[in-house]
Image (cartoon, rainbow, N blue to C red):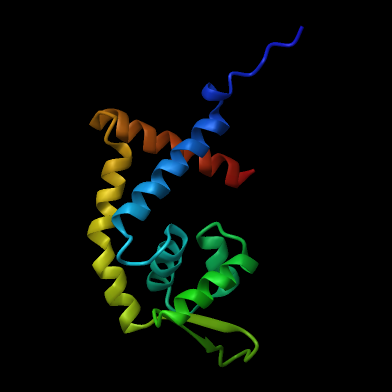
Length: 145
């Protein structure tokens, strides 16, 4: 007889629930900013690497390149991001954050920081550090594979 998996204790289920909780906190604290976690990550990554192309950006934020195009389009529509042709290859588009996007991102920083604190709040400071370290090692271990 096969033992049934306790779904509530399964790592995949717990990671999915933690993700749902994190997104809910993000949505709650950034509702007025009208931004999603993926939009925030993309905007932050482009600000850190101005002139990055869409494929490199998708790798940097671990998001599929095709879907990131629609997210980039929404950020462009908000006036937060601009695509410009690469001088060496006009088919390739380079991404830059506009001044409006930079202001918007700056205005979100405090709320995003608060979300991170809220996500980890059930844990003690030592547990928080250990949890983030283990989570980073889990992600890095799977990315390396």
